[in-house]
Image (cartoon, rainbow, N blue to C red; front, side, top):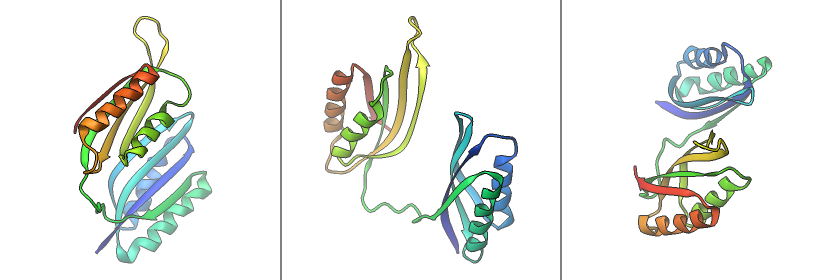
Length: 173
């Protein structure tokens, strides 16, 4: 039997970080299943879904924690196997607007008020085509509960887009 684990880490970017982490996983019989890794502001950060045989989970967790001596901050949590309590509709949202503080908060508040879960979220600053102004661009994968229709979510996001002077689109995943 295997146990699902979710590991997060962050540390100063340097060659060999992924090698050190993946070696701990492999050396303890674990499997690297899914990950999101990125260099941000000189730091290398990631979230990784791994699984390990029940008998080696403690050793794997200890080996990963031992990486902290090399400057990585590591956390490991036992996952639930991915079981969702209820069916939710999967939607994608894309957003583009002039950059300013509070954009993510405003979108997240709107989604939380509707009990919409953010499953994935990616964002970046890009330059506007003609002016070069910084534009905030985001893409999210959302799970809407059965009590919220795509039409209602779209209406609420369009209201928000008007307030923010943003382009927000919503589609099926």
